[in-house]
Structure formats: structure tokens, C-alpha cells
Image (tube, rainbow, N blue to C red; front, side):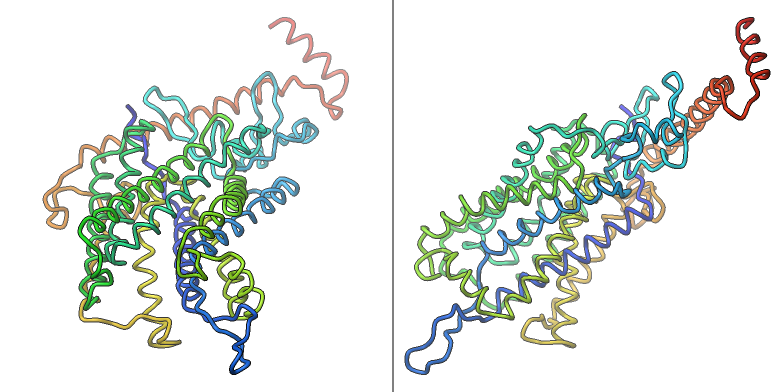
Length: 488
């Protein structure tokens, strides 16, 4: 098995995408939390005072529904990218126009492609070398042609699967949260990275190196520290009336939700790397479309008929709509949430596309910490009603953030800026030098083979194209070339 399996180059573009995903992920979490605390009116008035009736806008199903509606914007972007042939990760447009190919965009002479500036725009595709020295394209499907091949009809229905996973994971986590403290919720939700890593190794048969598993381990430790901090900061339990059996049920539901979400991440990575891959924007847009469809015809009917505190229902969609229509503050908050959740999902899927589903799970583990830091800023500098104060245990959260960065730097090896475990004191005497050396050797061999192949293709193109008739060459010269070719 190749040592380059699951070793992804983390360059400037990947770093920017990861940071943007953290930025918008933090933004959508803050918006979600803020919307839960907003008050609005549903259009009714108090009979005694004549003033509008105010309610708290605690609508978790609406936020899930709004997420899917926001993701549908990906279909608009998908259409724009295709129509205007905009370079975008997962899309190649250079060979779609036969005239452009004949004019040098992707000219071929006897199965040899003439490399040009236009054909070099294989956006988002990355080539690695397998154990036999053959090129294997990662992240963009076969030949980096994600979005270029004609997408079959079945693909549009096939992309309903991640929407189902997303809805199922959300429902399981919401049901489990009824029996658990938020701190336990954070810890169990962060355990999804374990399921992602296990499925990458045993289901997708993609080998993870020892340093990958060490990085995953420290990511889990950071999540436990952050969850423990929230637990210590809570003076009284939020679920004192919950029985041990109900707590066990809550843990099972949360673990099931984390597992289903891990399946979603791995499935999204797989569907973008199939023989006929789904481009990232189409994946996001169709997941949003099917999620919206299931939200209207499955999620909301169940939420409406399930008993609860929202006018007799778990969540009353009619009351939600009335509050949205009659409350300007909720409308404003939803518009911000709409765009932040879309761009978060966009950049998160691009992280999966450019790197892997494990990186997507690592990204999600960053969110509780970045949200906490943002809450501190909001509390002390903007509005203490929506923020979070510093506690004696906040130092533990800083320590958890340091552990998370430490684990991520280990997982990112052997790229620049990563931490290599070579027996140092901070590596706890773990020495994986042999793994790093084997990867370096294969990377150097792959680069040398790629350069040699490029020169070989260039030589073929030059030798074949030298006999192509050109209107700028005289008839006499063309005749001499023809005679020489016959003698050869």
C-alpha cells in the first residue's frame, strides 16, 4: 500500500478554506444561539393591554430547515459556474468546447494532449502516486473532471442520501440533548472524528498512518477537556430530574447522532471522488433541496403532531411563520444566519473535497472553542446578554484549544508547519521517523515521475505537431517534410 494514502498537501488554498470554514462556522453558531434568545410577536395582541404578544423564538426545527434552504443557494452558484465557465474547485470547463480544443485549448494529436495555460486549470484536483507508480487523482474524481462530465439523472436523486443523514443526525442529537447537559453534548458530538477515522480505514479502505491516529487521539482529548470545562462551570445540573436510564438513553442517542454525521462526512467525500463525481456546489445545492423537501413533508409534520411546549406541539410551523413575518429582528437575524450557514457548508464541503472527511471532523471540533472566544468578546465588548463571561475554569478551555492545535499539527504531517513525532519530549517519546521518511521518499519519487511524464508528453507533442501543416509554411517546405516522413 502506498505511503501517500491520505497524505494531503495542505497548501495556502487549503489553509484559507479551513480558516474561512471556521469563521463562518463560528458565525452561524453565534447566529443560531442568538436567534434562540430573540423575542418576537406572532401577530396576536394581549386582550387586556392591547400590546403585541411576545414569545421567545426557540425554534430548532426552523433553524435546521433554514440551513437546508440556505444550502439550496449552491444550485444557483453551480449554474453560474457552469454557464460562465468560472474556475472553481471540482469544475473543469476547458474541454467542453470542441472549437476551443482545436484552437489549442486542449488540443490532442494522436491521444497526446498539448498542455496549455488553459488546460492547467484543473481546479481542485490533486494527483498522487499509488503503490505502482501510477497517477491517482484525489479530490476531483477521475482526471479532476468533477463537474465537467455530464451528470446523470440518478445523481440528483442519489444526493438525497446526505440530506437524510443530516436530518437523522440532527434529530438524534436533539433527542439526546433532552436528557444530557450541554457539556456532555459537546463531548459526545466531538467524538464523531473517531467514527470518521474508523470508516476511512475500514470502509473506504484508505490507510491512516500512525501519526494520523495520534492526531485523532489528541483531538478527542481536547473535546473532553472543553466538555469538562463546561461541566465544571455549571454550578447545578440542568437535568437533575433525569433518571440514570434516561441519561443512558441520551448518551446512546448522542453517540448514534455522532455516528450518522460521521457517515455523512465520509459519504460526501466518496461522492465527490466517484468515477462520475458530484461537484461540490451541486452536492451542497441538492443536499439543501432534498433537505428542504424532507423538512416540509417529514420533519415539520412530525414536529407539529408531536406533543410539546410550542402551542401544544414540539414546534408549531404556523406560529414560526407568523413570528418570522411580524418580527423585524428575527427577519434580520435569519438573513445573517442564511448566508453564514450557506458559506459554512460551502467551505466545509470544500475542506472535505480538497483534504478529507477527517479534516471536516477536525473543523467541527474547532467550533466550540472559537464560539467560546467569540462569546467572550460579545460579553465584554458588545452585549453581555448574548455573550459568555470568563470563569475560573476558562483556563482549561485555553488548554483544550492548545491541545486541539497540537493534535491538528500532528495530523497534518509531513506538511510545512506540522509537528513531526521523532522522540522529542513533547512527542512523549513517540518516534515515527520511519513513517515520515517513507512518505518523503515516495513524494520525491512521485514528483520526479510527474516531471519526467510531463517532459515525455511535451516531446511527443512537439515531434507530432512538427509535421502538422500550417498556413504559414510554404508548400515547398511542406512537400519536403512529406518526402522525409515517407522515407522514415
